[in-house]
Length: 69
Image 1 (cartoon, rainbow, N blue to C red):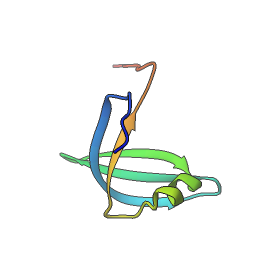
Image 2: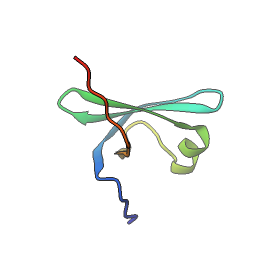
Image 3: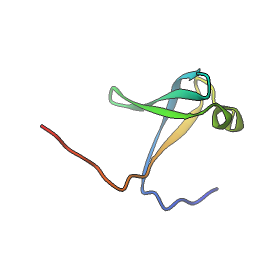
């Protein structure tokens, strides 16, 4: 099991995987009607063998978070 310094790790299930020219989009259902949309390289999609129905974890590491109202 890999350890990460990022503390924002949200477990869910992959509901969509779509490859583009170089970047793909992965949707992870994390429950309560919330879906996290991720943009990652096609190479990462292949390396992780991501497919619909897989369990996955969205790892969020950000130096800045902005809030607007």
